[in-house]
Length: 317
Image (cartoon, rainbow, N blue to C red):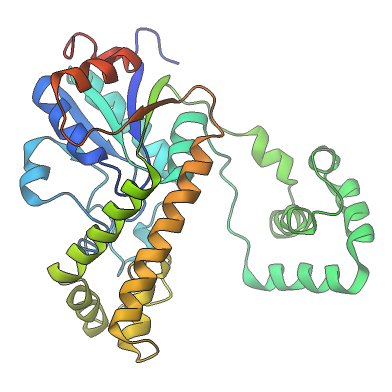
């Protein structure tokens, strides 16, 4: 961590919990710039289905990592590790301007990379993955684990030989790069900042109701038309951001595979399941502070948040 660098405040939580409203209210009090941690709001063509902040909200306070990539330009996509490296530099520039980065978002792997660092492991070509998988089927888990013990004993010591997916992944990396997986983990960068993190949460039924209502709003706002426009422009539907909730279901509807109301039901169901997975992920971090999300952001709410986000205390006493 750089000397005299601030501890960075982070607001996270499941989809639909109310992160944006809280962050914008904080921006009325504190000289912040919002660093978005949302792997889909990065894409300028994905607006309705990602619940991206409105133009008015984006104009309310400087935002970073929104609309900075394109689904039509795969080379602009950011892995979690690449995002973290860029975000650290962006945050250093924000601090140099005399402002405070306020990290907001719920993309769990991006958040982990930002706060903990993430090994930059090269992509493994499909032919290598297929070859290793064929070897696993041909030789069996025991022999493949023995092979891993030979080429990467450090990684093997951290694995259960029966967890074939992890063993296979480590062998794929070795075969593709000539370097053991443990080598890349040893190169994991150290974040230049420390972080204070609050997780917003709500009663489960209340959260699920908010998610359901938000999906209805997205559909009324033209989510299907948004996807139709992408189709007309020749988008590659296999692109990772388009295989996500709120887009893959619409593609199925447009293909005639499901009716409109089934599409609506699936988006709601899959969004609720995603929120549940997010909450499970956040529970991994003992140092995260959990705060009930308010229906209305009041001075009392801001004071409570600031007790956990120390950098905000001078502005939200």
